[in-house]
Amino acid sequence: MSNIFHSQDISQAAFLVTGGAGFIGSHIAEYLLANGAKKVRVLDNMANGFASNLDILKHYPAFEFIEGDIRDFDTCAKACAGIDFVSHQSALGSVPRSIKEPVYFNDVNVGGFVNMLKAAVDNNIKQFVYASSSSVYGDEPTLPKQENKVGNCLSPYAATKKTNELYAQIFADVYGLKLMGFRYFNIFGPRQDPDGAYAAVIPLFVKHIIKRIPVFINGDGAQTRDFTFVENAVQVNIKGMLTNNTEALNKVYNVAVGESYSVNYLYQACTNYLKSDFAATYREPRAGDIRNSLADITLAKNLLNYQPVKRFEEGLELTIEFFKKQYSN
Image (cartoon, rainbow, N blue to C red; front, side, top):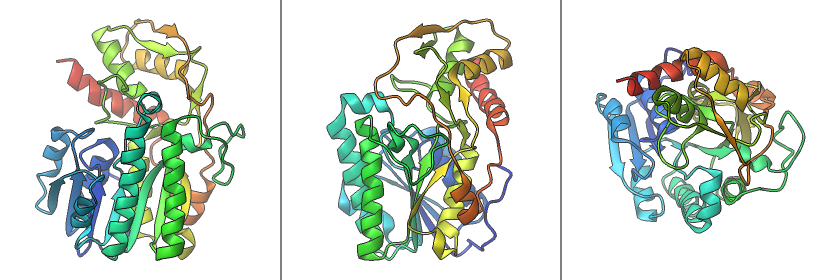
């Protein structure tokens, strides 16, 4: 990650990244460590995290790791002790999985989130940023998506993220915690999990094309997404934690590029890049999925000076190269 997203001196600042052994969290932690943070503590229960991501972070002397679960309040309190800034990435993702396991999703995504907010208040955290999701837009048809127009949730996962935003507002209003939420739009990149029943679409496509394992596209493939390279998510987390703009606080922001591509286009781009003729198989649409997704990122640009550094094609190239090395061996 060559871009620098902050101008402040962070050599005396301590950061906590929950879910830091996971996909987005490990990239945020690595950025902070590489740029000289005094301390970067990761809290992760390794349910979605990978030891290989921790191995990358262990090279830095400022790195600390707590293996623990956000569903346990004492663990959250311990993780927040002596910390200045929190980036909360711990969560269960996946719409279809949430439909199968709504109680588990609520326990982690809502119960765990409230534990982290209370621990942050108790430990006088300066600023707390957290991952929300574009899924909160639900059945709101307007494109591009604007933060103030939200529809009905279409899945338990979406409901947990919407609830996070409600709790964040309460903790800002009642306890004075300085908060910021990020509605991620289809974040992708190196280290994203290509395995398991609920794998993200891009690493799954790449792995299956390389290994010539059947690839499934849900529905007709014409559904569109604002695919957003992980470095853009890192940028907004860093700027959110460190901003001095009081107007930017206690809001939720779209984190995207502001461009949308169909799943068919994405698949074609993957096969073209891999010089493969491997065809996909179409199947029934998935329950709870949004048809089209495109973000208006004006708010993040204006209040956080967020500027997407890598667009879809460049990000896809970097991502495919990463997985190619893993699966071509």
